[in-house]
Structure formats: structure tokens, C-alpha cells
Image (cartoon, rainbow, N blue to C red; front, side, top):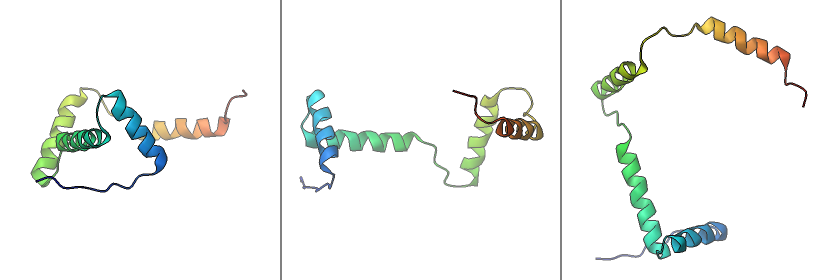
Length: 92
């Protein structure tokens, strides 16, 4: 069964959506459906943290991909930041 959905957008958005749909050889409705499906696929690809285990697995993967080396010293970062604030912007 097909149903109608009313989408409220301002005129500028409608014109932009319509123009892009035409460029892609689609009707506005088809383009909006395609954009909605693409958004849903993108959301499904993002990591989901349903519980502590899935969060732990995510961070273990991050640590594995981070490579070796040591974490930069935070106090040194703060000194650099404060030093740059004191210098201000260079003359244009």
C-alpha cells in the first residue's frame, strides 16, 4: 500500500532539492525517498553501543588501530596553548 507523506520545507530548500533531483534524473519524491534510505543506511553503519560489552569492544578496536607510541604530555599541550594565546594573531 502506498501512502502520502507531507514534508514541510522552506521554498529555498524545495528549490535546491528539486534541482538536485532533476540533475539526477529523478522526481522530487523519488529523490527524497533515496535520500531518506541513504540516511538510514549511514546510521546503520555507525557503531551502536547497546551495552558495556559493545562499548568495550569499540575501545579495544580503537586502541588496536591507534598504533604504538606514548600519549603526548597534557601539561606541555597546555603550555603551548597558553603561549599562543599570549602572542595573539599575527599582523595581516
